[in-house]
Image 1 (tube, one colour):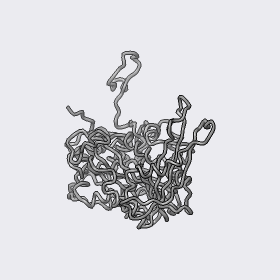
Image 2: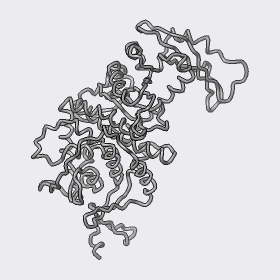
Image 3: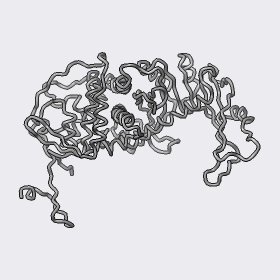
Image 4: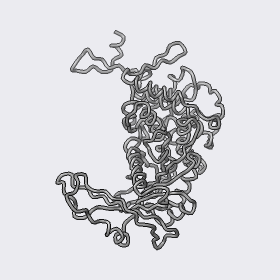
Length: 494
């Protein structure tokens, strides 16, 4: 009788069904607890907070930076990209338990930070250059921590840095948001770098992820600021691998970038835009063999020797790739074979042309990761100032790194491929019920989630963080009741 009295809705199709509202006990975001466990074991947010400057008066602080960052990052990782989403998640019990920095069962009596409080976090991060630099450094630090725990404290012998730019569409009058003729829309045009152990995102060694990013106006050229950005990315990744190389798209294979890498003895490979001089060198190799072509077509890799363009300081090795595939519908070859050029400073004795082509094609997974970022995290750069939007971008990349850590562990544990969207839908968006038993909080999960959760938690429990990466011991914080003006239940805005 008491349960029926508390019902707020009775469906007309079946009067036996009663919908009860028990927000303090139920959550559809149980995976936030997995995010916190991975975060805690690796010391991710705590290491970042140790590098941030907080100008607020400590005696007036209710939400510490680590709590605000967890709430923001976990919300992004769960797929909540809108700013107003945190007002709803502030009342979600699983999110409160995961993001709150104070132990004990009284966390259920708490509420998370509101959207205005999260906006003040953005002001703190954007208002100090040192804070923005700390956010950028956290990308490589978080990737490196997972790399070390998955490799028993050892860095990899060889690692590859992938560099690329991508568009983020904007719709307001944001500073730096400009129309880009190539993409034909108003965008920001950030540049990002990712690290891949052994040059393969599907290798046996975990620890791949974003390591550097910079927000740029929407109308800049692809290679704008690339020389310094590549140099900075290489420096950040030196602690991750004994030997590093770089992979780039055609927009970055300009003389300044290639000469800088060659001068610093960093190996690279990238696609090179064609021109009349290169086309002339390729022409003799486009002849098809006599006879009926095979069903799968032809592919040919040709060494064209060393090449020096007008504005290049150092000669670079040129490779021609001829891809002559039949049309999937008609089975007929095109009139002329398709081809493209690769440029590199790898010596022929170090890697053959075929090995370099295979190595370059592995960067396609990085392009997939950029697509995952847009679809699953959906960074929304809607603030008026560019520095604030750069903070939003870096937070989105950090959330993606956290998601990628769980995705990588699942792939190794289950032996199958996952994308972060599937991790969100299948693992993180799990229904849980929280009940209080004495001074303990009991979390009941959906039975369907147990195999995946058990796999993840078993692998996470084996992480051993190197001693040098352990942060300072945290002080135990006391529980503080919410202020009188705080809404303890969700309130819809008019």
